[in-house]
Length: 194
Image (cartoon, rainbow, N blue to C red; front, top):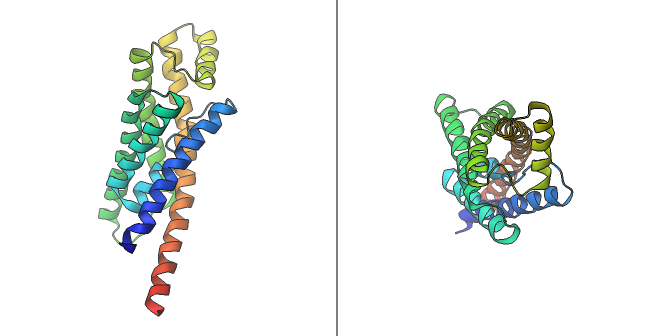
């Protein structure tokens, strides 16, 4: 039972941080999502199942309490799946090496591209190019002024926002990953001395 305490605490904390991160950027009207801020960290530390659970519960909170579209859970699930796949491939090739910052940045880049494309499809088709988030819509409107094409503006805005958002998430997730591993090692060391 105690073996599952650290992963459970990390996952629950990540869900709450994802939720409050997304709410915070909405309040200060900053063009980021931050709804998957620690999903990559949970996936790196605890595996695919908890990464997927983190994604689902983060999106449920956002849908229920802030009116976000449940359709975006697909993007969030893909972030966890991409992270798991990249980490899985890395461990297969490098079984004795620890995850690096570069690896997290690649995860962020891949997730940004996939989320940018899929999120744009969701915004274009389901939400008629209106995300209901003023900070995101302002970016699209700014791009529209230059390109005079709503679909192109939506896609460019989504890709740019996702690049910044997912790279930031990857960097923060790497720091959380390192912190979590130190805590787990410290706990194991203390148990072995007891």
